[in-house]
Image (cartoon, rainbow, N blue to C red; front, top):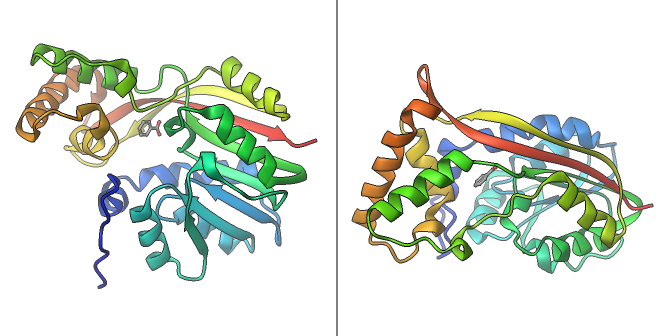
Length: 258
Ligand code: BEZ
């Protein structure tokens, strides 16, 4: 099997595929909301290692997948060489009136300049095109992020909220931004979705995969200690029966360019 050469971006595509494939599996019903039609041109924004782009491509859609992470795109190209993938940040898209739909699963909470991304998405769409997205909304992973910050402080590390890696807006906030850039918002939903993590190391793996930026500047043995304490403190709240459930709260939106 070909080993991919990892560049120095912080995304570990193999850990993502081996332990976090639930991200794209849970995106399958977002595909139903997208309701893709044969022959449509669709941009999968934040495609990760390409699994949902593949689902779309199997529905005879002309899909292009973009992701900011080179590691993810390398892996996507290896898995699905028949699909077009490229490295691009959501705030630097240069497409103009090219797509019938822009689709985005579990990505937009990484974008801390949401209005710039929304302008790029709007410009990428043809007239009457649609934007369908799901991402973390207000209150998402509160228990996990509070536990990390608390444990860091207990070990003597201050946490500056500028290092908080995510943007978790309310529906009101996000749909207002959508309207500001020109979208007609026809659907929005903010809901709880406790999300099962893989195996008994689920919470540790999740933190290593997704929350490493919170630990910038902290030595790795101290990071491991903090994560162990987080795991211990969250056990009563998020370990149910035999598995970890992350306290996800999602936002789903549909905006029309018309
Ligand atoms: C999410 O899908 O809600 C999420 C994933 C990784 C980090 C933060 C949130």
